[in-house]
Length: 139
Image 1 (cartoon, rainbow, N blue to C red):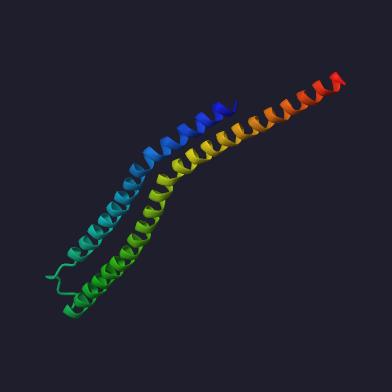
Image 2: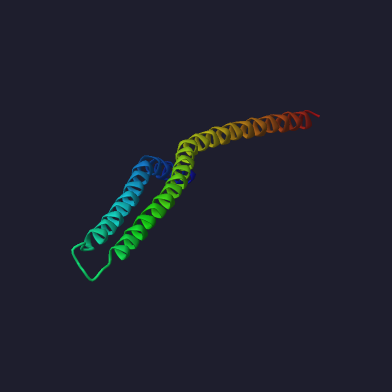
């Protein structure tokens, strides 16, 4: 039962280790795509303003363009902060993915050594009890 559980755990971790970089790249690419779509929408809104329209004054147009450019620059700052945080999370995940199999392997090796040690101690105790038993029979 333990061997089957260990095999399932090993396969699961290896699958996670193989698929996680791809998922990470996909999530970063998806975030970039969403940002690109938002900037396209904003540029469409800016281009939507018709400069030939006489009802809007030039000052209103300049204010609108200034507001849109401020929104874009604010979004760029937020995106840069998010990108830095995403980079930190990606580095942490990479180290976690790299070190998890190493620690699992070390855990398995240490546990096997512990089982060998316990078997040796048990064997020594059995031999001592057999000697005591032989001595008690001879007396």
